[in-house]
Length: 621
Image (cartoon, rainbow, N blue to C red; front, top):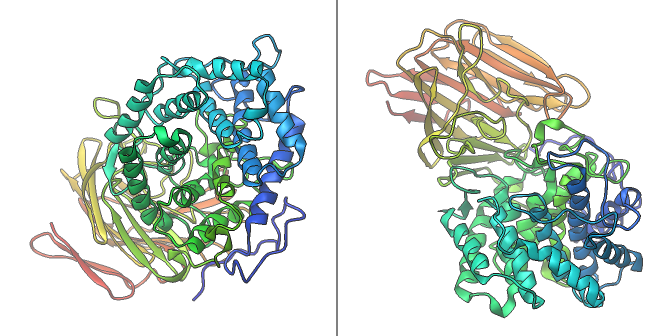
């Protein structure tokens, strides 16, 4: 069997003139370093019509973030400057001189408080803190071609603007690393800085380490791609800036953690290049590939060079084939098409350009093995995988037959520690996520078990209390309308069997949804019957939910929606409704069978389950 394939153009729709593919060097993606350079150039060129006259800001179309248009303009400069720096440094300055000149001009104008395009100042917990780190990184990596050629007056103004970070208060999250990066750059150019603040930021990162290569982004259970594009990435880049000033033990500790993380992160990419769709800031898209390159840069990766490039090129190609960048060469606020459901209050028109971090690999020379070794298959390309990740409370199960990665969630809710109020986010509270689907936004019935209030309102999952995560199973409990709901997930192949126990027994109806399946061109085909329901796309991808025990004789249903899903305009979620207190459900995402599964409850309350292919398991009472 082969992985699912959606028919797409031979070339990405909005990237004319790409280099020819190379099936010998890159037998899986066809892409080479030249493709990365061409996409970088297209992204940088696409921004030009939106530059202010002095090139200090990029005012992109779209609604402003909560920080306002002034800050958003700075964001456009800083994040694109990061991409430009990788492109300049990666070619040893052999780029069109206009690229260097316009960012030099932007630095001069943006840091001049009397210039009409000057940047907003760095202040406590304000967005310019984020952008200062990108500017500092870009200045360091492009130093021979930019910083070293700026006149003394501009350099002085740049360090004065960045220097406002010294003594300022950053949000107690990945923002602490922005301070580390910015002040380490200041140290590298002999400008005022605080070694105590740099050390404190790095020490705070240690507080958030949970083992297995995983950090939580601040206190609580906040696990997502910030591990990839921030919490592991910035320590590597800090060490590049610090050089001999860096403590060797600290550098070694970060490298060891990154190596362990990459041993797991490689499983988060489907065979079509799509990363698992979970967490916030997903409009950064292919930035999920950044730590792959960082591992190669820092000699801190367990991956062969050909696997690193296959995974990174696969995810960049995945998005370009689906319209990102768009016909104007812009990264829009969305996933493929513009889609508000993946945005946060801080998302502005230039926010997606944190995707620039994916181009970190251009800093590796063209003769580095990651560019010269033949591509090798990623783990999802060749074998089925079941992987328990106790730190975030996740199970990964992927299938080579369809190339899909599925993530079962029994530990991550992104809630601050109690007594913070419980609430649900569609990108954290679901029972499962995948590389082939997205959750319905706002909150839908998909991958959620809810008790229904008298008015039909579903209970939230709220705070997730992990119980265990090992082998092919994981468990947690949450409160729903005052009832303790304990769920055990057992995974095998494309299937997950969920055993739910509701205590005390509830009179309220119980509703459970399977995967939300989406398509851009046509609504999925839907079917339902007694105790089951499914949705199927034209390519055969199927989402099914089957009641194995406790659901009674009620018919399954399918909830359809439009413009509620990042993966396509039309979406459908198969749903069951019953009463409990013990419910057993089969959910499937794939092209395999959904029939033939069963569940039996013994006298001790244990549940014997059988998957559609005959594999059996037991869930104790």
